[in-house]
Image 1 (cartoon, helix red, strand yellow):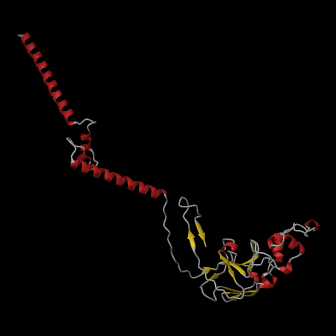
Image 2 (image 1 turned 180 degrees about the vertical axis):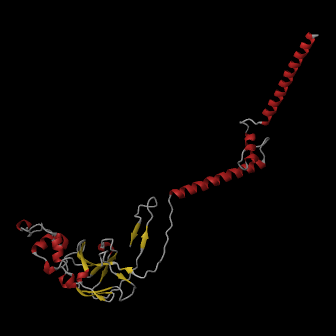
Image 3 (image 1 turned 135 degrees about the vertical axis):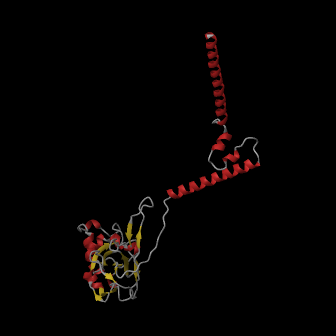
Length: 300
């Protein structure tokens, strides 16, 4: 009897093991059938969150519906890449916008005014040494011409600043009348500046003591009367880069922060005429790099 009991228990244990093994095999088969393999494109399309891809990759043959979905997806992808590339190129070009604003001010700083006589040297003030040294600037014949013996001449080395200062037209002799905003002014209100035209004069050129004006129009700016002293003009044998057949005054209006470039930015005033000049202040604020190779601020 005990032997039969033991055999019965042993049979029951083996039966339970076989039954558990069969149940485990069934569960593993169910899990394997529910989980799609990684290489299954249809399964990936069904589980992907990308719009439209699950309508393209389906089981079975490829039909018109799948073809239309594929074309729509490719068109959307191409449009996205085009817009992304366009935005990237626009960002790398550093685009900017020019803004123009007009502001009314109760008073403004009057600009600097530089005047130059077109004739750089007064004929009566030139010495023989000046004529010898200024031959190339005045259009005289070359020194090696027949009958001209520069070796026989013993002149000291030229001092160009002294020559320009001594032989240039003097403002106290040219200036006949000066008025600024109803107040008289004189040659002492001008400062000397040397340019390509020789000795020139600038009114209101000092930024620390610059004059201001409260309104525009005649009588509120600078009014001057000049004698160009045309009888002192040098006789011109020929017109060169340094000489001109013209007569008159060269004028430039500029800010106190910049030197006069009167040979490039100036304008001419003819003798015997009354000339009116109007101007306006323009301030430009430039963008720094990488939008350009400009200064951050500039006043004109």
